[in-house]
Every structure is written in structure tokens, then in C-alpha cells.
Length: 423
Ligand SMILES: *Cc1c(COP(=O)(O)O)cnc(C)c1O
Image (cartoon, rainbow, N blue to C red; front, side, top):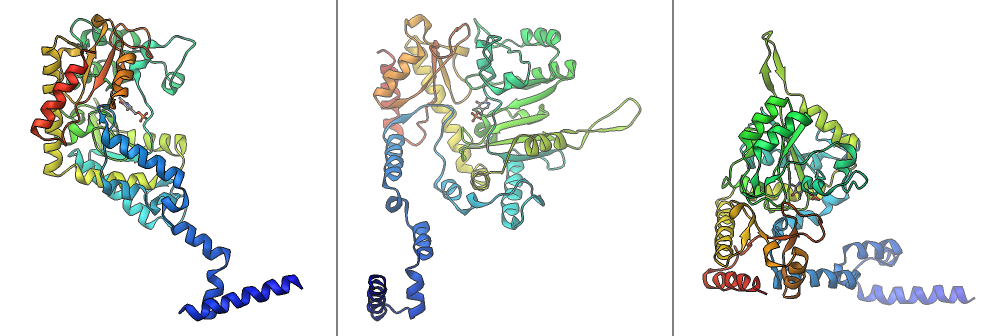
């Protein structure tokens, strides 16, 4: 019968292989079962399994390498971080917190997460008795600056669906946050929470001032240092931790880690009340419950492991000099632009980004973004005080990420960038 015959032929071919292979007969049979080939597939490299995606990744790698990436919210993380992000840590479910999980088998996941938490406190020089913190896959309190473009019928982020928000603004002529106006608005609006943080502000925050307003209004002070956390970790700009109750940050911007986020909260003794009793901070429990089970599903353990590595790297002297270089490049670039007669919002920069106001140049941020893209320079458009559209804003932001380039090359690039601005 044909099936028999097939069977017999198969058998013969097995035997032939046996003759060549050093494996015992039964092992050779198993090697040919689908289970064995599936395992082989699982272990085969990407290029073999999926050349399409492999090519796309190579193209993206080349784009990142050949072009000039000047988007302030982006960065190049380390190979070590990427190895952790692409590791078996992605396989594990671990809802809950270290030591209190819904799934079994979290012995090593707990180790990685606890280490990440410990390093997070160390990276920002926080006392574990006074601060807690952990990482989560997303941040999401995104872009209150966009709120000013909202209308009642158009809520563009979840923040405006869940909460009633009120933006504070820059003083249009000075380009600095108008703290006096913030104080007046807060007295009328009576916020429960004030956010100190932004995505396109070239100045430093006056955290002490915002703390004062929070105390007056009995509001929680949340510092969202997403953009600047790398500079804070390196100690090259002021830290919000001295004043804030809660601090949030992404981990992939200036911090230099994998794509993720962290929350820090104060804990321990808050104050002694009029009756002489201890009042404790109660953020830990509330935030933990809001994150899980409130909002988040399974933690991204590969990201948490990658973040632990980035936080370790953030404590090295090399990291500090890298962040010093970021500040120095950025201020040189701002100087070049000012010399060419460009109007910089905030009059210059005190951090890692430059916000160029193009309105008196008769061009908008979207067009400049497109022109730069065509010559492999990635920058991003942004609104400036007084803009009416977030899609066609009057400015764009650049971060001179030229740290990996040396002397002359850096000078040439700075000149090239400033001449491109003439286009
Ligand atoms: C980037 C950023 C975030 C987080 O944005 P995601 O889209 O969640 O990554 C939050 N706040 C500020 C100020 C930011 O710049």
C-alpha cells in the first residue's frame, strides 16, 4: 500500500541518517517530529525566520545611524539594555508586586524588579525610608501643554477625559513660566494637584515656587521630569525631589534607558499635626492600587530588567560627563542660532533642548520638519505661546545630540545646522 510504502521509504531514509548521525535511533526519530522542528524554529535567528522584519529593522538601524537625530524626547540606549529587552524576561506574567504576585514562578522576576527599584532610588540619590518607586511600561500623563489647544468637545488625551485640567502658560514676552499667573489661576481653580513638568520647555523649573503654590492650595505637587530625568540623575540640573510629593518620568528620553516609565512617591512621616500626632504620607498604597489592579495589566519584565541596567549606567562618571556634554552642546547651538538672528523661546536654553520661534520668519514648524527630514535630520515641530494649531505650530525643537562626535566634526555640523536654518 502506498502509505506503507511511504512509511518504509521514510524508515530507510532514517536509517541512512542514522548511519551518518552519532545520535541513537530514537533520538533521530524525535528530531524529525514537528515538536523538534518547532523548537528549532524558536531558536533560529530572526534573519532566517523573518527576513522581512529583519530588513525593516536593519533599515531603521541605518536610518538612526546615518541621519542626525535631533528629537529631544528620543535617545540611543545601550546594547546591554537592548539585550535585556530582547530576553526571556518578556515571557513572564507577574501581576502584582515583588513578593506578592498573582502567578507563580516569579523568583527571578522579583529579583530583577527589586534590583530595579533599588537602583532607581540610588540613581536619584533618594533615601529608601522617605521615597518609594517602581517602574511601569507607560507613563501617559502626556502633554498637558496640548491641553491649551483643547475645546470642550475635543478631548485629545485621557488626562482630559479623567480630569478637569487647567493649563498654566509662559509669559509670552519673556518665554518663562509665568509663576505669578500660575499662583492666581491656582487660587481660582483650586487644583488638587499641580504638575511641574513639560515636553518643550528650554528653561529650568522653579520647583520651590510651585511647592509654595501647592502648600497654599493644599495641592499635591507632581514633578513630571520625563524629558530631563537623565540630566537630573547626573546632577547637572536641579532635582525636583527636594520639593515634589510624586515624581514621574519616562525612562527612554534623556535618561537613556528602554522605552518605559517610573513613578516615585514620598513615604514615611509627612508632618506632626496640631494635636501633636504623626501624619504619614499615604501615596504608596493609593498609587500602587491605581497602577495595579487599577490601570495596568502584566508588567513588562524585559523593560524593567533593561531599566535596571540603564539606572546602573546612570551612576557612572561617564554618564555624568555625557550629560555635561549634552548641556554644553545645546548651549553652543543656541548661541549659534541667536547669532544668526533666530528668536529662541525662553531666550536660550538651560537644558537639553532649543525651542526656535519661527513666526517672524514666515515659516512654520511643520514645513521645517519636512525640509530637515529630506536631508536626514530628524527634529520635531512644536507649539509656541500663542499658537492655534498643534499640527502647524510656529516652532520646532532641536536637541543637539552631538555628544558622540569629536571636535571639528561637531563644529562643521553646528555650522551646517545653522546654515540649514537659512533655507
Ligand atoms: C514624554 C513625556 C511623557 C510620556 O509620554 P509617553 O507617550 O507616555 O511616553 C509624559 N510627560 C512628559 C512631560 C513628557 O515629555
